[in-house]
Image (cartoon, rainbow, N blue to C red; front, side, top):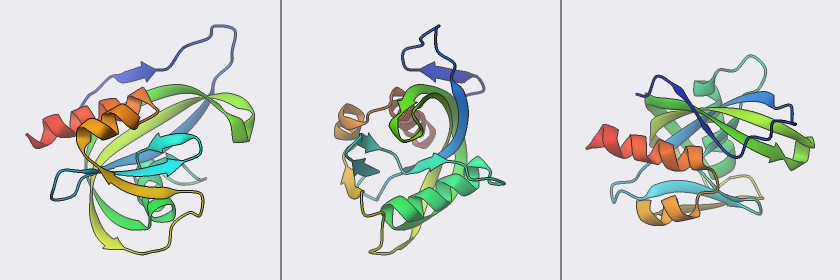
Length: 147
């Protein structure tokens, strides 16, 4: 596990970034492929922002279910990274404080968020297509943890 909070994205010193904590899951199947959600905004690991009273663990589990239709069990935490982004839906710049976990599928349901496609991708393709650098970093950490 990485102890330091890494930072990804282009920092604009003239912008105030609003902290937005969340939890994310790196889920791999027996073939080694990575579970991803695909939206009009890009390709992402399952996960997202924490709701009130929720920790990053609960957010990762809830978001994997809501976005992808997979119930997951979390394994070890991989690390924490800040992703500097502009969130269109919130009309503001955010410092997404992303806590990443290794996770395993324990149940699958056909239901998922209607604006999400779900895909299992080989690691190299996932690394090329993921929008956020912090998520590519998390996959690297997961590979190191399981080798």
